[in-house]
Length: 433
Image (cartoon, helix red, strand yellow):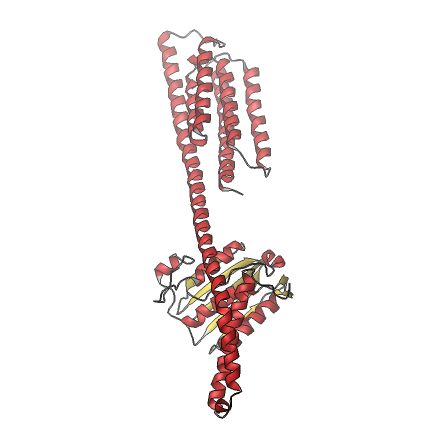
């Protein structure tokens, strides 16, 4: 749901709450004036107006149950109806001479806060026209025979009550409305920040795709040359050199695999098609592949994901996990902890290390680009890319320093995200904390 619509819904609900207060206040005022001050009021028509407000509230609450966005025009119409109902009550109770006529200011102030300039001035014009009409057209009150001093005292007391009521309601509701507007502005600022970060990711993806194209030819050339060397008699006579060339071939094949993975993820090449698997198997295979390629000293791997779920395997998602694993290994070469669990319909992966942990300023800016403990150019993009990819999938990434030593990064994703994942264009992620 968009931020403006969410804010309009909250503000419309505030108008409903204000109207309930108006209904209660009108009932109390009518009963008090009619029975305690002995002012004869047309109770039946005034009660009908109260019932109209009750019906309007019920209709509005039913409207709020709908998923349709709440427009500013609806807020404008609701305020117009409130002004009309107030005008009808004032018409039946003395018109412009009624001290509660200042409640018009409450509606105008709410309009100035909730509506645009044009709608606000329209509301001001409507309220002013109603005030002017009440000066000429109203039902005079049947006031008991008080002396002039007593009447003035009652009028001043009524004006004070009207002022106090208007001031309190304005402070209460304007404060809450401003809070809703601040939340909307903060949400819009977050969306703008996300858009800027996603644009940054697109640029990185384009650079990675271009680099993969450029690297394909020299890698293939190196592979051919290395293969020729291995068949030359001068090299075949040296077992140590043959062993080193074998290791070079392994690393070269790994580079080619990374380049191919970048091209597949960017949509430049096609994989072998959709691979159905289960969450446990996918994570077990990813952990096994990472251990085989990185050869860490010690890995504590725990997979308690139950019950298992069917998913679609995706190479880019595996790169996200590898990124987190590589970060932990670089921070703590002696030990890495990997744990997987299921919390209702969420996948939770915790990657822990025994390294120095995150600096306080890094913890506060996890997911921002170029926030890194490594003093080298271009570092700090790994978690930035991971956080944005996970956020795009509806999940979240959090980091913390462990009580004793080291740090842990927790990745949380909704399982529904994985039911339809395919190899159709996910970004490639470089390892970098």
